[in-house]
Amino acid sequence: MNNCLFCKIANKEIKSDIVKENKNIIAFKDVNPISPEHILIIPKVHLSDTSMINEENSFLFSEMALMANEIIKDFNEQDNGCRWVINTGKNGGQSVFHIHLHLIMGRKFTWPPG
Image 1 (cartoon, helix red, strand yellow):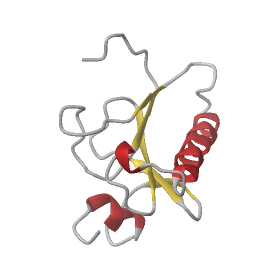
Image 2 (cartoon, rainbow, N blue to C red; image 1 turned 90 degrees about the vertical axis):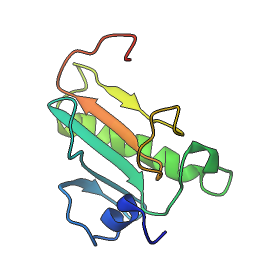
Image 3 (tube, helix red, strand yellow; image 1 turned 180 degrees about the vertical axis):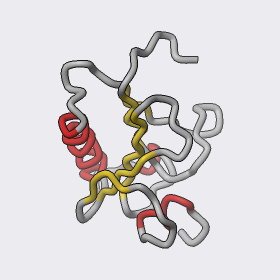
Image 4 (spheres, helix red, strand yellow; image 1 turned 90 degrees about the horizontal axis):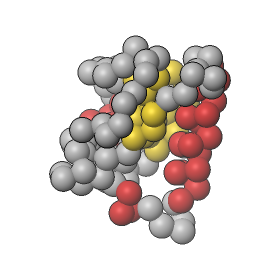
């Protein structure tokens, strides 16, 4: 998708602070963090939201989860815990319409979130 901010980041057309990357997934620091460590994990192909996940591309969601676990270990947060957030749609709080996992770490979180 030509106008998608996250596609441009995945294609390295826009500079970002990349934390981890593989063939299908890229993780980078959020430019507006809500915690000491706030990382976005995205597939390199455009999927606008969770409704686009199907049998053919669901492996990307698994790869996002595996990368999240690797990052948690890299940041030594496995004992402290963290929060995974995926917003879907306008009412779900999604502001960039390219599926992304917010991995937020480095502080204690409360419930409900908002």
